[in-house]
Amino acid sequence: MTEPSPRLRIKLAVDSPIVAAEPEWAAAARAVGSALAAEGHRVEEVEMARGSVDDFLPIYQRMLADVPWVRADRLQPATRWLVEAGRRNSPTLAHAAYMTLRERVLAWVGDAELVLTPAVVGPPPTIGAWRGPDGEAVFRAYAVYGAFTAPFNITGQPAVSLPVASSREGLPIAVQLVALVGREDRVLAVAREVEALFPGAREYLSRRACPDSQVYWPPEAPSVTPA
Image: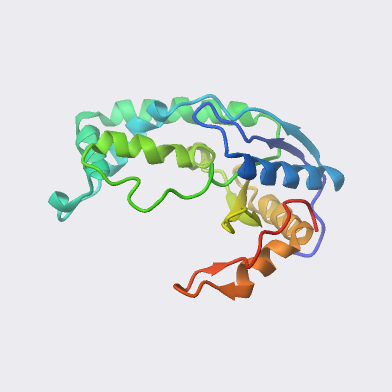
């Protein structure tokens, strides 16, 4: 586990057809891409695979509909909407949606050996932002946060999230690394490389505890450029 990672073909994506990453989150991913390119990797920035929230819906709805809910009457509105819609969808429809999306994402990955994206699209919402009786509206509001991670949940590719910087407000910013199916070794090797290139992130994130919680925050915003 100490050998350097081989030089790889890496696709960098900070824009998705679903949503573009917030500027600081995009800048952090690009900084990681630049640092990896300086180490000899071949990094190409592209737009994320074509897709929409509606492409994922039949899959997630059917998955939740198959869960044996004990107290379905206590579900949050968004979950209840997904379950009820999923019960109206056939397993055949969900499987067809899954296969179509999986093939599309794998075709987009193509000959790239690694994918680099923001882990999420931006800062967390304010408390209560996703509270409301309209389940579909609530789901569509928070679904965009998975624009860069959901495609690889579909394909089953190994991925890792790594904090590399913090925002001006002191919130941690992470990137996602995704390898080909069965290449956990590759994603872990490059993750180790990124941690070495951005050592300040781990130190800032573990140095000081927020007075009102057990969550650890950076005391100041580190640069998104390599240390």
